[in-house]
Length: 354
Image (cartoon, rainbow, N blue to C red):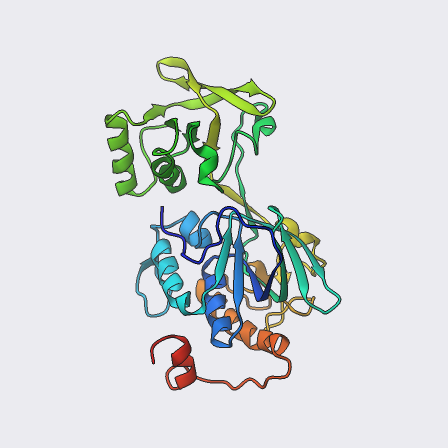
């Protein structure tokens, strides 16, 4: 698995109130570049993303797929672009809260925004930047009868705390990067680990496939080719899974199951925040990229305006203009002096290059 960031909040956040200048919802390329543009203007950021790693669609859906339309980079993969952006924003020290979704948003009496995640973490921010791509990622549920009864107790669609899988019989289902990454990360701490895929052909990174096959060859884990057909257990506690293979049915001991069947995009809780919406997109102006609620901005694929192009480079432009407007809210009594990074000694000092 790619490294996330040394500034990522730990698995066991206290839930204590976090106050920040800006809360960015979404850690894809546009959200990451927003950290940079805001940081140049002395606006501190916290970033929340429902995925367990930064990079958004680039890192989750096509980490090794080449992208050809990023200025000055003739070709770059989704993961490489994410890594470069993470390097670029290091001087501004953002904190990432991964594996969480913003469920509630309200306005405080002082004009700031209170936001609460599905894990109970509360933020109060002067501005909110929605950079959530097409919305929140929702994992695809396997077509297994009664799986809902096990979700959140034995069946999980992401790994939020690795310790929850320690000394457990883990079944991972899937053949992409997420399935392989978590196979390699959880195998050392699991009591037993089985990787199940419908065919002996994997979509993940070749080096990850090689590492997995080496573990199988050494007897450190199992690889099954087939499909899960039934779950067995009681009170949300999974005990075993029936797997159909070419040889017949097999019962696999399992106390934790991680299905990685891909993701679908939904607008999610954003739809309930009182913003004007157009066909599940958020209309914004093209001066500030502000929504119908002052102080809440939307950049990237989630916004809509005449002539909108759903390109990463468009989102970068939107982040720059958004940051100028955010400065007027964060520092209402401070005049903003426009500067170039090529000639401003103060900006170069912030970036650590002077």
